[in-house]
Image (cartoon, rainbow over all chains, first blue to last red):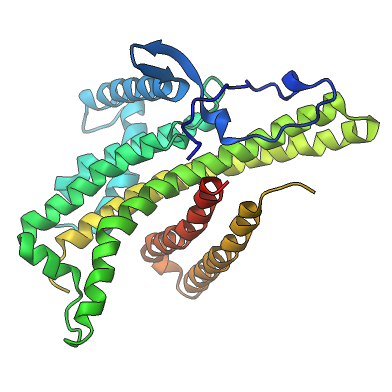
Length: 272
Length: 68
């Protein structure tokens, strides 16, 4: 894949290569934004924002929950309302009231992290979703992957876990057909889709906004009078996409946490 | 005309998931319209189904760039 190829980053100015060369459509290379080198590691824009967001979130969440009172103050009320979404809608409803407390820290952390990593794509300063770099979804997915297999093996035992994958009540003849399918689902499809869904949504959304904004600038600067008029709806469309992206960013964080909870619930479930 | 065939492939691969997502939310809206109190129960199920259907379109998007 060319997504991580260190290519020259051309910046956000579409007219940098102007002078009658025509509009250059954005390529995946716009996501390669190195800041500085630290030995063999190149620190990119996304890495810096990931560190900043994680630090700010940790600080804010500790500060808001430290002096928890029975009658909540403004900050605590806000935080509790935010916390209720992953706690009640995601963890409790998916895993069930009996076991969900144990996995609550993981799910709340994942939801919050993914949400704010995504939201970095819609606000000035960063203007680049951290999760649009494939490494971040893969790292988050690795945690989920290890956790739900670990839970399954701990609950059913190693042999029992593999047995548990095949739904009960199937005729004996069908089991050899279903078992490989379930094996692929558990070990390949689930982590692959979990990582790619988050990455693909953020990647495509950011690219779309980039296309609209740079296209509008190109129309405005390089085009003749008719094209200059077209640039206005193009700018408007970029704004609409930006608002739509807010929805997608929230939804993807929700889906990521929801699927994590559902995988954990699946590993925890008694034989169906 | 210049272009890349893999992008056309992505367009084709998006048809199926698009129909699927439409059907899922149509069913969800129908369900809530008939029984508004079932909304909280149906919402995670609808979003789960939406996420699973959407994964196919995302595969297409990624493959379009892989085979570029």
